[in-house]
Amino acid sequence: MGPVLGTDYSHSNQIVRQMLEGKISACPKIDSCYVDVRDVADLHLLAMIHPKAKGERFLATSGNALSMLDIAKILKNRLGADAKKVPSKELPNCKLKLAALFNPSLRILSALLGIYAQVSGEKAQNLLNWHPRSNEEAIVSTA
Image 1 (cartoon, rainbow, N blue to C red):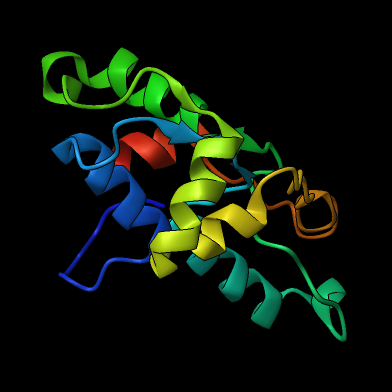
Image 2 (image 1 turned 30 degrees about the vertical axis):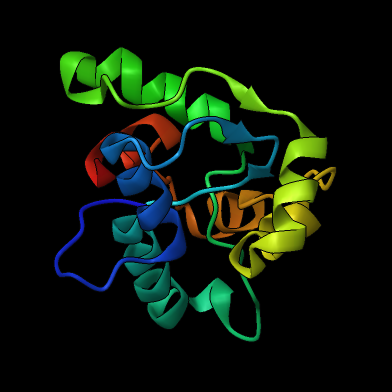
């Protein structure tokens, strides 16, 4: 997430864009963790120069999983009229699974149903004093 500098949108950026454009009519029940691209850059720098980072691996995430509906709510709350096309309801799992039978691009989303994708960036926060932006700030910056 975070500010988009070009036309090569990541998967997460595409979802926000499609929500704003009204191309997603309802939100699949999928959870994911997010991080702002600026915080990823900061973490890379810290991992290169901080003595405690030697030989370690870090997960770049704010640590709080959000559903697609949570993202939609953030967009609506923060962007007002600019988010008028953002969906406000969830898509039942059975409808997504059925649609995925006929639309190959939905198969990946269908496979993610029921998976809670909670991960933690706590190690980077504690060891390197890394402090990522909130999910809300990253999502609004993407929009």
